[in-house]
Length: 500
Image 1 (cartoon, rainbow, N blue to C red):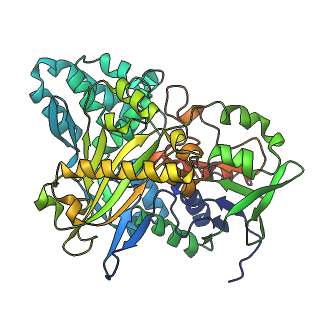
Image 2: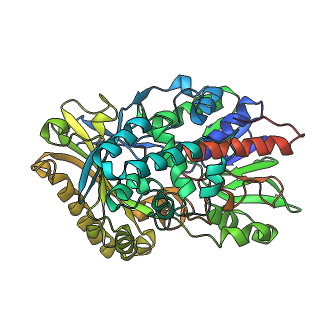
């Protein structure tokens, strides 16, 4: 085992995109940063896994989480941040004119990435609501026009609203409401429960900021961060679980790992979940009572169930021509949420995709990478006995393949690899409570500024990632890390790195 320095300027726990973003900004500014990651890959949810077809040399490369990402056209926030980091120059991007397919009981539309084209499509499809659609898109544009990272007046006005209330202020038609809310799974709450502001920010990132896929997937993005960190005297240490955040006299002094000893630093940035950080990692939770009240009071977001499937043949020719499609059997999304809550995934909508169209050529020759997913109540998958868990997972996998059969009738005969993940899988790899994929839920009272602050009450301890400001998703967590690094510098010698 290679010897690693024990003294660093900053230690980052976890290599999710929030942790990598914070580490990159600090390393480029001259700090010696050590990132400690429990897994064998860097990236958190932004990583891949490989599966070999038995008895062959054929290997499928599955992207864990990235379907598409936004705000990467010049002038947008992620383009600026990744360019500043030197990360954008190390990755390739595929940009799409069609963002996704939206299918419901009375609609089936290919949704343009460009907001203007999207608005035109809706106005032509529903001319009786053209005025309301125009006003809805105008308000979305106004929310998008924040100044220097601060919400616009339209954004502030939407802060206390649910998405359902927001849409109904402009148009009352269940088809249009369902179409506009197509991406609710990307933020983890249905329209009657989700923050209108946060939904709009996510929606705007694609429809005003461009719809992209990183060539090589989320792992390629994470690896680009790692290369920048290590070129700037930092180190990303994999397969290294942090067991404890060590404090002395009420302030952070370093971390203790499960197998590699203790590393010392006056600053620790935790990319682990906020509940895990304060209840399990911090050696003395009593010194963080100011943080714990908020950490323990906010609702945890949903989890996800998904299947990663490799098949023989070209899926586009076989019938699955959508890079990403969202299929909802009902416009009553409250009824769907009730089904999610009780674990009735057969009554829920699902997302299906042909990954060959996202990343052409990044698949075995003559084969296709497919993906099926549905939002899940993670708590229902926790602490099951082994036999019950195995049976429920088999049933879920069969259901997912049934969904694929609707596009590719003989898909079962073509499957070479099938890997199904449940909320239990999400928890095992992320340590997130109930396998949450978005940290805290995005309600009007638990998003962005309502989350635990990135600068904690414990001197030297900071948070980055989905559980703190501004929130989850690829873009949200990278902005989080960027912002947290700024706070670290403000507290170290009064230096500031400015604004993105």
